Length: 345
Ligand code: UFG
Image (cartoon, rainbow, N blue to C red; front, side):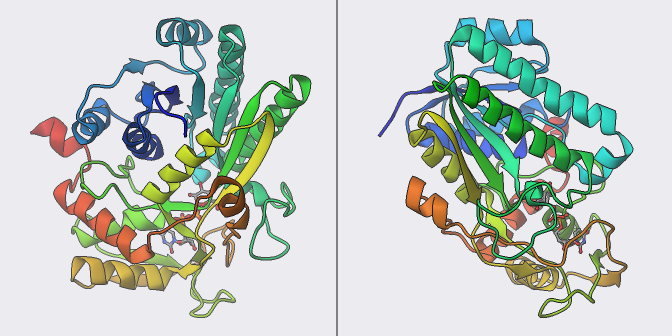
């Protein structure tokens, strides 16, 4: 088993990266967090430091600043990078396509340039189930068709970045690249110190439900109850963020020359109503909801086969949706306004 690797995490103060940083430290690795704080805050990094019990290097930097990245590589001499940085709101990407292509694609190109200059060729990329577009069949395997039916620029950036990384490894086979396709990350670290802290009105179901549970919003809008699913509401593969984080550690330990692709999900679908009911159980109170029209671009059902990740990485998700709801509730009830509570304190 590898230990003591220095690993740059771009987007290092974000929801998923902070949880990955905790699991990397637990396995004896040394994360170096790089983030421009455009959709995150320094408090999240301090909270990670509290959990792991030591200070971590943090550099405030936009990853498109290649000179700045070169300096980070020169100073910290990392052996690998996990690339989380990027914009991720589906609806916003439709309204602001150029901003999304600029941020997500150019940050990746800048990172590849800085890595090549520094001779660092181990890279894990935060990809997404969105690359599968409109699925032909479920469960989704890594062999499933990609690209057909992607409905928004955010999804296209993930698809394009995967292609850029495959081309990079094709041109120079010494690159070791892992594409991790996340399904629906939810939950929070069990300490309740770090979690998802969306700016403004949450786009995603779980943070919205959590904010209804604390009374910050009055009810959940259930986007459609007439899908072809058991209860008519949308079905997704919700994966606990700590399981997801452990998937990154496993991928790091199994990096090999070339490109590998893995789904990170549980393989189980959960409906919107099932998730709301699980959250009610976790917080011990009813969660008011109302059925609303379908959200444009949404699919009825999406879940993966996690078989390849189990076979190649020895990784499997172990936590349930109820575990995720309990951890999300601990985080949200302790920090009703997210990290802003700590900044005001
Ligand atoms: N939903 C509601 N009410 C809400 C929010 C969501 O009913 O307020 C429903 C959606 O219709 C869907 C389910 O809850 O059926 C999950 O929706 P999310 O917005 O939480 O997640 P999505 O599956 O739409 O999208 C997520 C990520 C994307 C990623 C995609 C990959 O947000 O970044 O998974 O499949 F691309």
